[in-house]
Image (tube, rainbow, N blue to C red; front, side, top):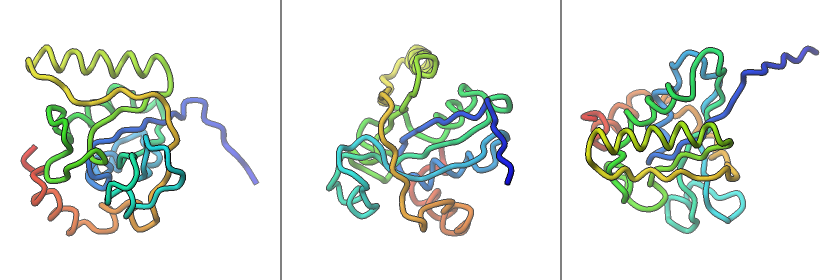
Length: 171
């Protein structure tokens, strides 16, 4: 058996409403190795989709992106993320409402935190609007059940319908 260590392999975690919707644009991004849908931010252990959706935990729906930083930068991932959310909505995203659908960037080091902070500051200055994307410390990420993984790839027609009905398509 062979194992290949890639020193440039990194992870990024973003919450931005429905994890199916925010995962979709990263599947075709060069340098992205894996996108995992899941939950982050709550104190409960191993939450289920139904618990999070039913606001029974304090988790957000989120995605964990495993990427090769020699092929795609953290800044590029942030640009993709921000282009698929409404950063000016602090109550959820599009038709998905509630704390489980609010936005957050979970940073794992000071460099990521500084890059994300700078991005948010520049967006607020350029739009003269408050950005409702929390900068969060590293937290435990729980993968969602298998039927939620790669949902957009497995269900392209349903995803297109979701994008249209939710209002994300207009964004």
